[in-house]
Image (cartoon, rainbow, N blue to C red; front, side, top):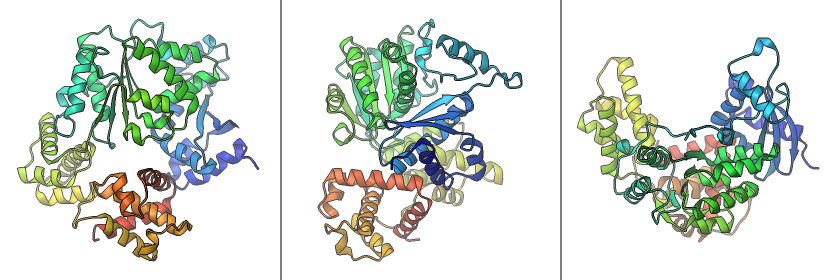
Length: 467
């Protein structure tokens, strides 16, 4: 029996309730009213535009993964935002919403449309959505990002006029892809403040398109994006499986590229590893330069730490800096977060940042490896945890407990080793890279939506670290 909107949302809430604190659940989920579920799209009603923004910023990933878990498919989430006409609830936001509602021919007491960039077409100057603090001045270059950084500088000086169009940046989370997008945009605007530059996440692009589709303003949406000189679109993998949005983006991409406008796209994987994206788009992603941004090497991590300390007017002993760089190896965010945590602990405790404090803070922030973690070790610990024979890990068995253990081993191998998807697949039952990629995605979704499963993974990780 097909799901209706109320049953679907109730099933989602039963999962969400187990993954967020009780107060947050009451505040952000209890007021939501499901209105319609049709053609893989769930329409929900929320009380205000502020409420919508909070859901998008804090819980979008959780809701999206929960919807996929319940429906078994990629499901679009659409919003209807109610605006009360009760005088007690008037605010600075209300007149703007009322005016926008009149322009769209609907009553302000019925619905308000979330702010979209194409609402600004008539404005003299476009809000680029750039973070002015993310520039090339504080983007530290190194061997792991030299190609991407060099291409970004060339583009900023002559957007649309280089062979790097589009520029497709890929790499793990936290290696600086978003920072580089903003740096290119900021420098391009410094060079020519008449450029129409726009930074947008793929998730927001999807939300804007869905709202335009509901309001019959898709042409306005397309025309706005076709007016951009430099389009910086983040996390393109989030459009996976969203055929309608991909179709619109295809036409926007073609128009911009044919008219010499610049596109820069980021992704968490290379085009050849992307699934759920139309082939015609994948082909276009490869027209320019594809550049991988790798996790920072040791020397770059030292440089990033010293730059952060200098900007913040701080001073750490050299051995502390080296200890952080040695153990926080995955991304820039971990490095900067550790510096902030160290200073907070030092101020609260009224003591200097020494090695004892550094070891305690670093161990809470990242996995400090006490032994070499290999694919073989991971398989051994996973089999031991689930009490299964190691030979079954390499078999063709599709029993749920065997298949899940195999996927967990693949996920942990990707997380704790530097081996490629293909190498991991070869080591775990001679599977191909697509199988490993699918396994990593599945396990990641389960961790986000199943508290008990997450605890199992954390227990296995402790075994791997010898704890």
